Every structure is written in structure tokens, then in C-alpha cells.
Image (cartoon, rainbow, N blue to C red; front, side):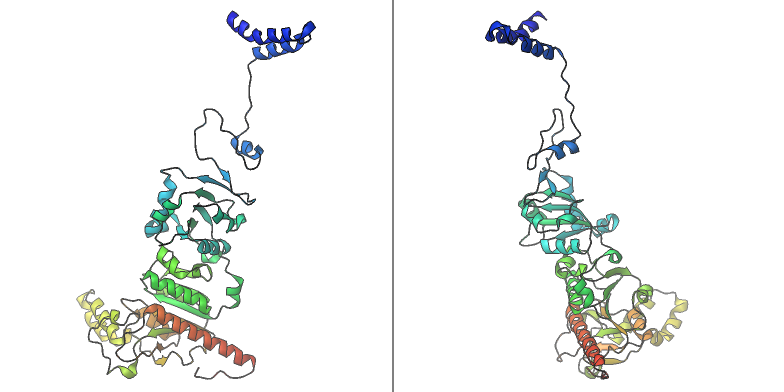
Length: 422
């Protein structure tokens, strides 16, 4: 204790000697009394501490605090804060999981978006971002700041994003969003202004690239909505999103529907048409010997459908086998056919069904078309040439429907009657 007093009084004695006449005696005594007290420093909470820190500089971590990524403020005057990812950050592994696992996407209600344009379209449409990974802070300046304030922003190395990405040239921006609900989305005003009474129904489409291209064509043609039946590929799969080029956030896409509920999503008095690659005028010349719908890419011929039904009949009990065979003709509706360029948009609204690449049109699609007075739409091709794939067929039919609807609107505005042939 005496040593401590000598140690603490040493500076005070020196101060007294330095001040002639004892002028500094009072100051020295106050300094000594201050040393005898136990100093206490009141630290504000971390949030308040950060708010009180000068702009552009983070406060020092208190002693004993666990080290972690220090939030930083983004440049260009933005009020966004982000953190730098540490090696082994578990959130980074979720990116790969979400991208590859449909089960995980369905269970957790999350999707993965990559690229500035796609993420910006999602934000503008009202999609909710949860976590955004970026390689440079310049990416944040290209996105609406007000829609990122509740988002976890994580700065990572570009090499890491390159390893996660399936793109040849990644943009350094990946986002995890809540799975969008079409009823809560805000679609672009220009898209709504150019929307037509034309719907698209995808029947068991399983190729991601084809579905993405079809969605892009549907948005470009001005379709009012796209309906996907059960069996179609997940529209939020990364490959579909890339091929769609933002179409997911321009028009409603309703997936995983049973055929019994399809009519609930169509306007009243909608006429349903089915796409068909089989031209009855060339039936004798182009008779298929394989009996496989895959030979035609996106539709099934009538006899193929009967063969499919015949295979399904084997699963029934023998007691009902004769009954099924006797009603086979009634089971498959006989629809009239017409060329795609002939007028098929006379009804208040129209819908087009595109069949899958492997099995073609389902019997449910034919029954729905029959119940609404629809027909088969034929796209003639040169004999000997393979039929068009589903994406090409959908694009031709949708833009032809758009041409017919716009022509009808133009002629009705002039008081003219829309002809039966386009």
C-alpha cells in the first residue's frame, strides 16, 4: 500500500515542485483523490453505440466481446449496412441447397435468384428478400435501397459466388427470397395495360428450359396468366428462372393445379384450345409407327391417347375391364381441328393448352376443351420434318392469338365485324 502511495504521489509531488509557491497543490490533490476512486464506464447498447458513432467509422468493440463480422456502411450515401462473411458461414451453404433441392424450396418456402436484373424485377414486383450475397458494394447501388432495409446483406468473395453459380459468367449477386405469392405481387403497369384475354395452360411440361422459354413468350405476348398442372417442372427452379428472363415477375404463374380446379382460374366463357402437331390432311402420309407421344414432342395423336388409355386399363380389376373397353371411344373426346392462323378468338376469352414433351396432351385437357367448345389447333409443317417442340409451338400460338385479338379490337372500334378467318 505504501508503495502504491509513493507511486501515485510521485507525479503529484513532481507537479508540486514544478509549480512555484505551491500553486499546483490544489490540482495535485484533486488528481490524487480521483485515483482513489473506482472508475466506472457506462457503455450504451451496441445498437445505440453504432448510432452514436461518426458516419463512416464503426465504434471499437468493448473488451471481452466475442469477435465477429463488423457491419459496414455502403458507399454513395446509402443507409444500408452489411457484414462480411466469415469462412464456414452456414448461410452460404443454404444457397446451394435451395438451388438444387425442390423439397427444400417447398418446405421452407424459399427460392434463389441470381443476377442484378432478375433480383431488381423481383424487388419491383414486391417479392420479399431475406438474404442477399454480393461481391462488391457497387451492386447495392443498382438496387432500390428502400426495399433492402430489412434484408440481411452479406459481402462475400467473388470466387465463392463463382463456385456456387451455375452461370458461365456470374454477376456476383445472389439473393434468397420468400417464395412469391401471385395474389400479393405487383406486376408492372405496362404489362397490365397490354394484358389480353388469353391464358396458357401447361400440361405436364417437365423440361426446365422449355418452360422458362414458354413463360417468356407468354409475358411477351401479353397473356393474362399461366396455369401449370401437377407434373410440370417447378417454375422456381433456377434453370426455369434463367430461361424466363424475368417473366415470373410480369404475370401470374399458378402451379401445381389439379385439372378439376383449372376452370376456377379461367374467366367466364373461356374457350379452351389444345395444340396439336398432327394434321389430319397428312395422316396417311405421316402415319406414326412408334405409337409414342415423344415422337411428336408436345402433343399426342388420338390413337396414341387410346393406346395410353389401354395401358392404364391393365391396372384396373378384371371386372371393370370390359366396361372400360366398351366406353373407350367416349373416354377420348373427338375434337374438330383447324389451322392455327384461322380465327379462334371469337369467345370473350381464350386459353391454349400445350402438352408435355414426353406424353403429350392428357385426356383431361381434351375433355376441358370439349366442355368449352374448343378445338385442336394445327401448326402444319413440311412432311418428313419433326414437329416443333413445346416452346416453339407455344410461341407461335400465343402470338397468333395476340394478332387476332388486337385485330378484333381494332375492327370493333371501327364498327366492323371480325371475319371468321384471320
